[in-house]
Length: 314
Image 1: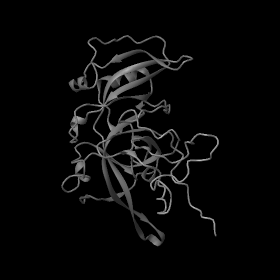
Image 2: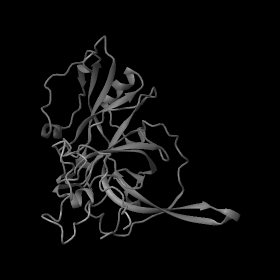
Image 3: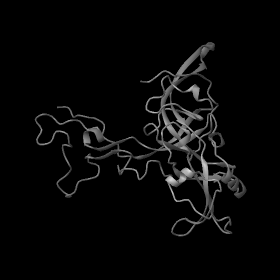
Image 4: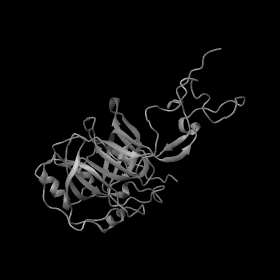
C-alpha cells in the first residue's frame, strides 16, 4: 500500500497560542530615524472592499487590475505625555515625564489624571517616547474610552515638545505608496478543540475512543506530551505582526468609501481613512497600530485608483 503524504496540520510558527494581554498590541521593537516625525499611528479597522487600477500592457492595451483592500478609519491622536528613559544593565526605565496641558476629560475613564505636572527636563537621559491616546468619540463605533500607548519619535527634543500641544494626523506619519508594519490582535474564537484549532481531520468511524482528537499523543517514553501535538486550547485573540503592507491611499473624503446602508458591522466612516492592500488581522472596530517598517523597503509610486467599490456587503 502506498504511503500517505499530507502537509502537517497546524503551523508551529506561532507558539505559545495564548490570549493577548490587552485588546491592542504592545510593540517591543522600533526603528530609529533622525527625521522630525512620529514613527507610528493607530486607526480603527472598518472592513474590506476592493479597488480597481489601470495599467498599460503590451501594445498600449489597458489592463484593469482588481485588488482587495482594508479600510482603516484614522481620527487624529492626541499627546498625553513625554517620557524620558534611562538605560541600565537591567533594561530601560522611566526617570521623568512631562504631561500635556490640554487633556481630554474622557481620559478619566481610563487613568487617573495628574493634579500637578512636571515641566523640568532631566539633564541625562538616553531616549524619549511620546505617550498618545486615541479619540474614538470622533468615530461612529459607539465608544468613548480612549486607548493609550507609546510611540517613538524621530528628531530632536524641541520637536518632541511641540507635539505635546497639538494633534497628530495620519499624514504626519505616512504617505501614499509607502509601506508599514501592522500590529493587531486577531479575532477570538475562545476555547476550541484540535479539529478547529489546528485543522486535523476527523478520525475514522472504526477508530477507538475519541473522534475529534489527535490519534496519537506521542511516544511511550519519555513520559510527557510534546507541545507539537495538536490539542485543545485557546484559539484566536493572539498578537500578530504583518510586515511591509502597502498603503494604497490616504483619503480625506469619507464618502469615497462609505457603502450603501453603512459598512457591515461598523457603520459610517467620519474621518480620514487609509486603504491597505490585502487583509488586516482582527474584527471590525478593533484598534490597529501602524509603525514604520523595521525591514527596510522603499516606497512605491502611488497607484492610480480608478474605482473603489461602495456596494453593500450585506
